[in-house]
Image (cartoon, rainbow, N blue to C red; front, side, top):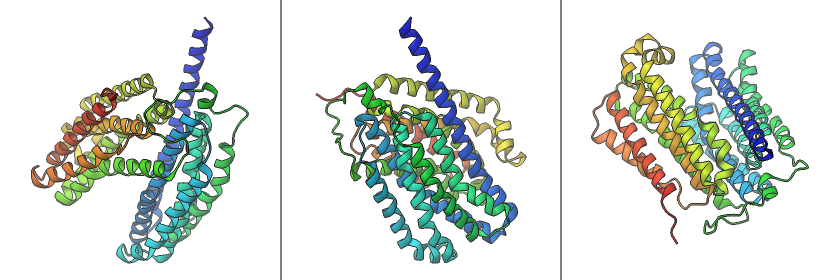
Length: 410
């Protein structure tokens, strides 16, 4: 009876944590959505284009922050140790320096105001450094605090932009405010991640580390670089079809594909809270947790694909309007592509967490194959590019599943 009660309590805590992280994710996405909506109404077309371009560059420069978070979370869940402070600071500083070095080139190549590109390193520094504290909270499975930290980070990244736009300021003033709010969020994140009286979960349980994984006890740059490479590969393959559509299709076709890709991204990101919650257990080699997570993500994907099949017209009406209703029959294919990539992302995180070599290699190969097939074989239509994207997602899913579940070598 006591054991059953304990399991029920654990399920309740996990459910509350999942709900909190989901809400924090919705807050983040909502704030990110508000910025272009406000910008379109408050800025001229030229200023909006400049601000949107800088924000896109900031998103790319933030990739090391996601890699840092994954590496710190996996290492902390496995070993329960520290070592993230200096590495986090070095990662953020190096990213900011590289961004600063690229500023003159970006200014000329993208025709941006030099003040905007000079502010970019500071915003990048804050976002990347935040990955350290998010990783510590995730690795310790302090998910309620993690949800609070995610909300604080979102407010820091986008709050200054929203305030600046509401005040009618230009792109430079908006980005300056965003830089200040981003830097001010860092002490709050540090406070949320401060150790509590209870030891990290991995240490309290004394969970044994699976033999033969090759994961060092000390957190180092190699682990962060591996996680960064995997994060970049995941972003690249998930946006590759959209970029190819822009290059290969006429303007109308490219726009239609962009509307359909909203369904792909929805199916991709909807179950990502599962991957976030399960990562610490994956780092300790918990095969049951991996199977449960995979089942949940597959179930979520199946529901979304079924919903797209039944309500394809409604989905496209909401995503782009009545001008795109002729693509309603493709809605299940767009959703299926995203659902398969959601599985891929979880399995890639599993391989990163367990110290596998070249965890993202199948994704890079699939991206090359997708580009080649779309450019050389597929018809220059929305369906042609989409078919290539779906095939690439399916092949990558099968490959990653085989790598994850193949028998370990003795």
